Amino acid sequence: MIRLGFLERVGLFKRLNDDQLSLVRECCVEKEYKRGDKLFCKGEDAKYIWIVIDGLIDLHFDLPEGFTMEEGVISSLSQTMTLGWSSIMPPYKYKLSACCTTRKCKVLRLDAKELKQICEKDVKIGYLVMANLAAVVSKRFHQLQDQVAERRGHDIMHRW
Image (cartoon, rainbow, N blue to C red; front, top):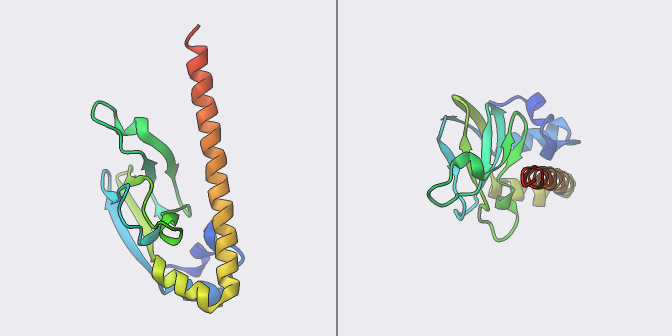
């Protein structure tokens, strides 16, 4: 079973106390994947939130034939990082695909319905999780902006 000390380092669960983290832990299952395994694909029903325990998970667009998967990578996620938050936000469909990019990946898979029930029963948990989710989404958005600016700058410099 996952340690509470790990959960308290996860951005989504910041400021939750041990009793609250214990409730969250009840909807967690540890899963292992190997390089190339997909956790989920774009367009699938989003039922789970995932937290990286060990290894790297890439979030990527599914590009047409002729493009490499690396060209579609939006973000690489490492220990304690959260993915799959589409599972708690309508329309509950994954917007990107996720796959393991290291020899082995270990993740926590949280059942989104169970987490939502916990959040509804204890509104303080619900408030903290949603506030933390907003911070996670905001950080990812700013990282994406930086990546786009860097790529555009690279493209501009190489047109000279």
